[in-house]
Image (tube, rainbow over all chains, first blue to last red; front, side):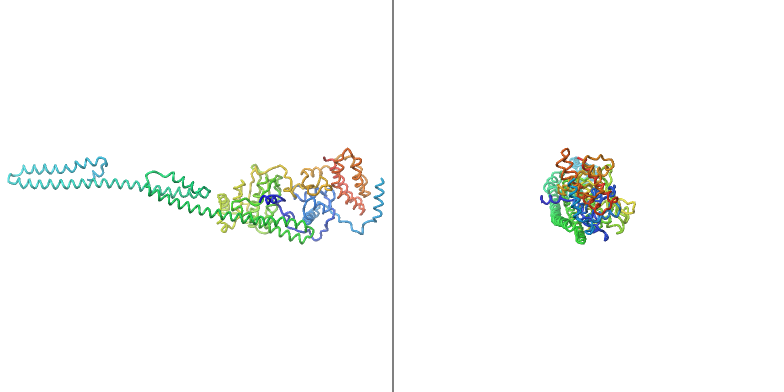
Amino acid sequence: MREGDQEWDEGSPERLYVITGGRSASTADSSLDLVTLIVARSGPTAGMQPEAASILRMCHSPLSVAEVSAYLELPMSVVTVLVDDLLASGKMRSRAPVAAAQLPDTALIEAVIHGLQRL
Amino acid sequence: MTRRAGSPPGGSRPASALVWVLPTAVTAVAALAATFLVASDARVPIAWIGLAATVSVAVTAAEAARRGRLATALRAEVQERNAALTRQEAETARLAQQQLPGVVRRLRQGDFPEDVLKDLSADSPAGLTPEFRAAHQSVLHTVVDAVSAEEDLRDSAQRAFVNISRRVQAIVHQQASELRGMEDRHGQSPAVFGDLLRLDHGTALIGRLADSIAVLGGARPGRQWSRPVPLFSVLRGGMSRIIDYQRVELHSVSEVAVVGPAVEPLIHALAELLDNATRYSPPQTQVHLTAVDVQSGIAIEIEDGGVSLSEEARARAERMLQQAQAGLDVNDLGETPRLGLAVVGRLAQAYGFQVSLRTSAYGGVRAVLIVPQELITTAPATGRAHGIGASSGPRPTSPRRVPEKSAVTEQPAAEPTLRAVTPLDRPSGPESIPEVTDRTLSGLPQRRRRNRVTTPAHHEPAPDEAKSEQPPVEPGMWMAAFQSGVTGEGAGQSSPATSNREASSEKSEQP
């Protein structure tokens, strides 16, 4: 029983569905995936959901959705839902990962790297 | 005769001894007088007649006196019996009106039957026959036996309830932690995740039922929290355990924490009140949940837009809260559809919450639960219990070197706001200045990496800053700058990158 009590002490009293309001996935047209970069456009406001406020705070610098998920210790879907809400309210902006076709020549990048390292 | 009967018992005996002599003497005197007054030839018969009369009067008077004494004795005995009867009557009334209720009350409170009986036998009044006293004692014994047998039955029933609910709670907890693990594992596939959330919700409802039964059985609700938990998490914990949690709108919440031992009872009481609120209001209406500071603690208000509470219904509900505080029978469980109020009453009594139900301005019911000051702490709630809550701000410690968990748990709550405010007027650190300049425009992030690589070599003055403070933002920054360079969006992309730099320089200044 003692060990059980220790285990009870873990975690948080709130369950994930309360955080997302029962939604399991973002809206259909969401383009968020693990490597989508998100960045905050404004700081957290009073009365905001703590998770949303945390996302805004940590996304002062662009972060990927996967990183946000890891820092918050929340599953990807929960973060996606929260980020989608923030995107919809204009508090954040996202940038889709670069498509492979758009990537420049790796040789060019390597050349630049070498050049920079010689600086 | 009647005069003598009315006379005091002590003086009746010598008086009656004289009284029967008096008529006899009068008759004898009268007979003698008649004998001397009549003619001499009639004297003999008259004398005889007088003698006979005297004798008969004497006999009659003696008999009358004897009966008088008898009647006096009987009357005294009757009085005595009357007095005894009165005492017995009073004693029986005392038994019925004071002793038996007292016995039942004490037994219900858990006193031992032996103690109760000992106290009772001590205060028996004098003047009662042993038989009567014995009869009363046996009545008391019978009642004590019956009541204690009933109490034992109730206790064992309650223990059985608690026992069962504990087992259910254990299973539910196991289930919940496994579900949480699955939610983490399947977080990327929304369909599975949605199903898991529904399962999770159902499990939480089962858990609440088990908690309710445990509380009604006189035990604590399930979990124990050793650390303070933020009020916001507590409120959402309450929301987690009701069916219609989506209808609950969580408004401003004062930033305090609830001390560990009171967390679970508060969550449970709130869940029951929220359940009542959502259950007895139309499905399309919202239930408003707020928590504000008041003088005596924190007032948590739950308002619904449902059916208004009539004065009579309100009185009934509050009476139910009161009754529950006095103790509720497990036997009543089946008959009480509004189990919730009973549970809330129990918890309120055990933990000092004040619960009141009023008519809401929205037309429905407004339940106010006041958490006393001593259960509130303003100390920042740290650790896992705080969890994903209010201040799980990002990692001031470097996420690259330390695993994410400690990154989340270690950071102080105040830091993010500092970072948010300062970018404009920050004094840039010497090593952060070159980073900001033209790197964004050229879009080549590698300079960051080089900087970091060379940091140990020539940043002796501030090794800590260089090693631990700059890396935090580096991943995102790297990507951002890389991307802005790749996509060639000059001005548009520079702003996030710049803010990134600013944030990083902020970080480097913070010890």
